[in-house]
Length: 162
Image (tube, rainbow, N blue to C red; front, side, top):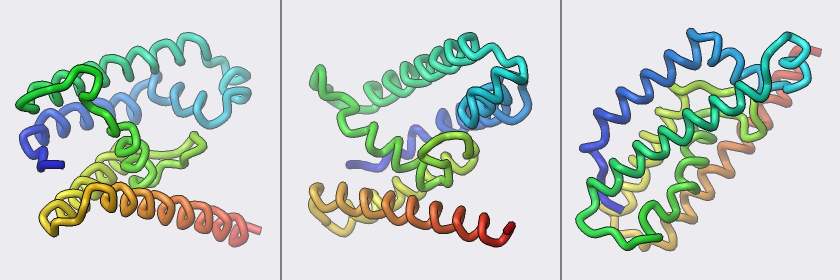
C-alpha cells in the first residue's frame, strides 16, 4: 500500500461537510436517532424510511466520490479489483475512531482520526518492509484491541453510574 497524501484535501473537505451535516442538521440528528434506537426514533416522530433512504443515498454518493478518487490516483486499475480490501480498512478506521460497532454512537471527527491513525500504521509497516499478509493481521489486532477497550470502558462507565 502506498501513501495517499494527495487525497488529504478532498478527505478533509468531505469529512468537514459530513461532520457539519451530522452535528448541526435535523437529518444528522435523525440518522443518529435511527441508528441508536429505531423504536424510540419512530415514537419521537422521525420518518424512518425517509431517513434510511437519505442515509443510503449520501453513502452512495460518498462511495462514488471515493471510487473516482481512488481510480484517478492509481496508475493501472484491474476491473473488479479496484478498492478490494478497503471495506476492512473502513470498518477498522471507524472502530479505531471510537464508534460503537453496534451503532448509535460515534463522531465524524473520531472516524477521521481513525483513518489517519490506520494509514499512519500502514505507511509505517510499508516503510519497515513488513509483508502485506502481516499488515492485515496487525490492523485486525488493532481493531480487536479497540473493541475490547470500548466494551470494557462501557462496562466501567455503567458500573460507575450504579
